[in-house]
Structures are given as C-alpha cells and as structure tokens.
Length: 202
Image (cartoon, rainbow, N blue to C red; front, side, top):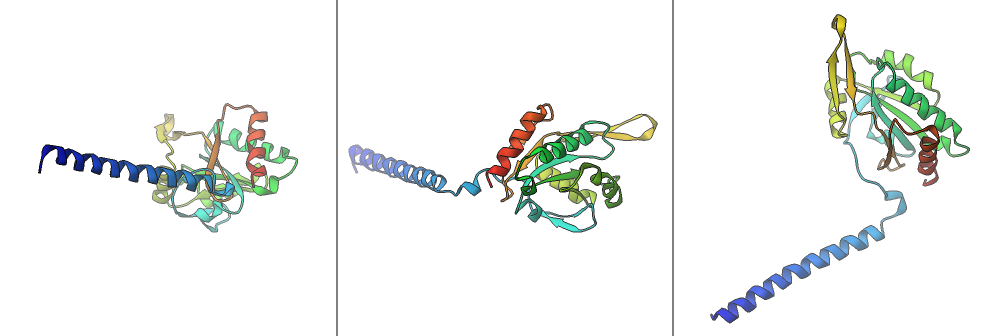
C-alpha cells in the first residue's frame, strides 16, 4: 500500500469520526429543543428513605407534584436556619396566588439531636406546608453528600457543638428538578420574586 493510499484511508477515517460526532451533537441539540418546558432544570440528589416531622416515611417522591424550596440546616442553629425558614414562609405567604403549589422542606444536618420529636415541635413555628426531615444519621448525611452540601461540626465551650454548613435554598420544580437557588443575603422582594417565578412555571 502506498503512502498516498494510507493517507487517504486515514483522512477518510477521521472524516467519518467527525461526521459521527456532528450527528450526535445535532441529535442532542434537537432533543433539548423538543424537551417539554416542565423538564427544565437538572437532576440533583438521589433516592432516599427518611422520616418527616410527623413520623411518616418520606422518599424522594416528596419533591414531585409541587414546587419545593429545600433548605439544609439544624434546629440548634442560633440565627441563619430559623431566619431562613421564617423568610421563606413569609415569602410564600405573600404570594398572591400559587402558594398552594409550593412547599418548604427542611432537612436536618444534625439528626442525632434533631429527632422526630424535636422537629415536631420546631416545624409548626413556620406555618403550613413546611416539612421537616430526619432519620438515621448515616442516611441523612448521605443525602446531604448527594446534594453536595458542606457541613462541619465545630466544638463549643462546655462540650457542645454547632455546625457550619451550606446555607443555600434550592428551588425545585414539580418534577423534582432544580431550577434555581436563593442566597440567604438576598432581600425579601427578591426571594418573593423567585418563588413567584417558580410557581408560575407550573
């Protein structure tokens, strides 16, 4: 076989590979263009089985059927966690319409202290449509890892401890796909606008 023939075969092979790559890219593009509006966002988390603040078994199905504002924290948090939950509850209540389409989900990062009994007393302070989730420590913390949540136990004087953790609120549509976030530093009108946008997409 001559060098020229080898070059021709090599060029033909490279062209074929490039053509396949182009075809795949085009098909991916078309698939995304035809994806229903309800499928916007991206997957987050993983399947789980834990317990809510009423003692009922809860799975990842809690994130389907309604939009969700999801926050990881702990009940012994001195400020950020209760403030965030209160702000979310107030913003949800302020929605002129669509509030029934939105739930607030609080997932503890401190399952050793945040038992079902503790959450049962804690959650009602923030009004309706708020669900607290806890469970076996290994299962709860695995869920936090699946969501990419950072947390660190910090010892305090007297032998106690507190937690440093991710304070982002995750916004999920009714398919359980993340469509945005809320930063704790955002003012109330921005929080309300984001929740309004979330429920009006449904």
